[in-house]
Amino acid sequence: MKEIISAVLVILGSAFAGLFLILLFGFLFSLPLYWLWNGCLVDAIDGVNEITLLQAFGILILSNLLFKSSTTPSSKEKSGDWTMSSWMIVVTGLLYLYISIEQGYKGNVPFCIMYGAYALANVGLYMSVTKWN
Image (cartoon, rainbow, N blue to C red; front, side, top):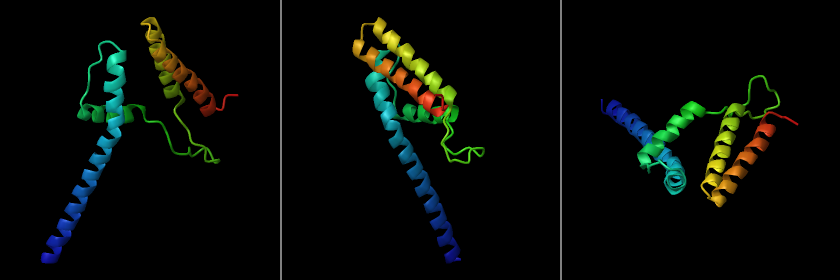
């Protein structure tokens, strides 16, 4: 009987340790989003409020559910190429272009140049992913 109880405790302890590690790494991966949001977006875009680390974690999970790109080889592709969602690259590039124009309109030249370069980089990424020559 003691052996069964100890086995159950080991299983429960492992499950809780695994859950703890998943949450720990989730919050660690949320830190860059948290810092970028509060450090850059709040000052750059009017009407954007600061967020908490828990909200950053929620945004990270939501964005992964909504916009997860395929990072595994397609079953149709025998060459082992990695695929990416081309429509997501286009949407991201257009968002960068909009933010670049908005920052230029506000007179914030460094951010205008930075987001313009991001938009241009997404054109190259789109061309690379779709093998558009």
